[in-house]
Length: 370
Length: 257
Image 1 (cartoon, helix red, strand yellow):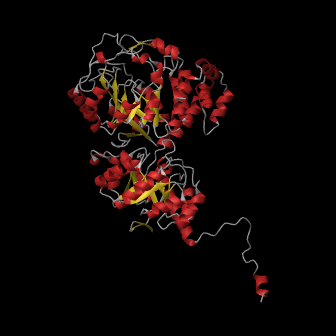
Image 2 (cartoon, chains in turn orange, blue; image 1 turned 135 degrees about the vertical axis):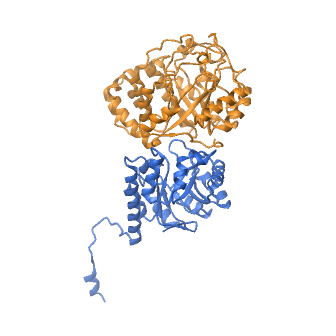
Image 3 (tube, chains in turn orange, cyan; image 1 turned 120 degrees about the vertical axis):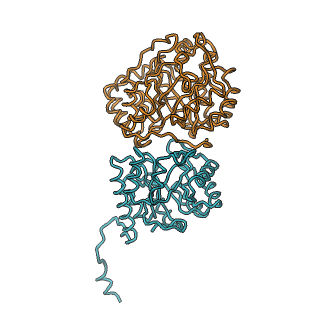
């Protein structure tokens, strides 16, 4: 049985009930353990754990410093295209939005790479809208050779691809692939993803397995918080993570916590919106559940939130991000996927980290490694 | 003296460069440790412009032997590639061979490590392999020509101490090359115990870098390693389960013909 199928044997409503039925005693029992199981994770993200966030944060910080030391890695997103063949009600790139569509050509990419390198980055996340024909493998084959030689680590966040395509991307120098499930609630997933290949819930849900089979070094998971109950979606994400780690033990895993942001066309109002304090609870619960997993926090979050949460449990952050194609060499807000909250310069982010006694890491990979 | 590949080192404490809060803190801690061999992950180096790397700049200004390591390599092929890159960039034959495909506990791959060690020794590297506390594997690595073996005390970064003590004893007893206990040493008392049982050195990184006061902890480790070494050389008395009289049997034995 595939991991995705195992995951789908867990009924959404059962998990929700189990989660909301957790008691203070379940939380205390989880906090008393040195190795937590998935039920413990449910207790830690449940409403019953809300009074214990300070204790969780303390333990999360100890585990993080221990495993990762006093370091935080930096990356930057590079948007290659905002062309999209999907209709997703929460996203600025959605097909029906009448925004200017663009796909960077080689010269434009070179300018972006130069601008990013000038800021000091050595780790890049390539992002496109989901468009198989215009931003698919043929495009990647054309553009990756002008990008990968300039960075020690290259991540991609593009449409789900086949195992064979992932093997090919690895050959072209891609180390990390992020594919967020958005929501693990199949029916609600259908309501948000109205048209295009992204409407295929199961193809997306099987993607991390194809990444594992293809030997991709780092696999990024996550749910877009605000599409369904964040607790249940996080419970599924954590279970997905655990099952994948067991099977694909040679891959590293990262988890991100994107919250719905305003976008062109207005986007949608979040369902059961996660509060700032609950987001801290969730991040700490992940660290206690999986001390080795890499946790990422993007510029979707405010500088105040990031400055205070990064020192607790975060391993990788973006900084000075632009979310539109061409944004570093010729910024224009009209094209962006979503509005960022932390708009500080790289220097300001670094200074804030150093004030917290954290060492910013620019290089943490060798080109040529997996 | 710790003798590795025809080179003598006064200090038996090897240190690392990862996990510190800043390059300056790293420099101060290493300097306080009196360590003469310092390992550095090649993946953390700005390989495109090594002159721009603050960590490397501090290390090169110190009177130490740089020991580049291949952390991040998942197989022999990647480790050999990283080793050659390290030799070219840093102009050194020293190499700490690390191959850990397991991403959670970072445990070393014995098969790939032996394979890489055989090749790298032939290519002229002074190979110090990070390995499981497996006495047979350590003999095989020794036969492959490694300059030392570096069995783990516990999973890397775990600070759990000498969980593999019984196997370390066998390795120390059998080895014809120096044994350096790498990984898992959480406190100066662990380091002291490793030296007392006859290890030729210990490598400590996390326990120093993540201490509240790294520089003070580095001093404590330096003392503990010296202390353990001195105790080992002095001939540590064997442990007994029961009390033993200082001069037993003598009266009786003297009466025998």
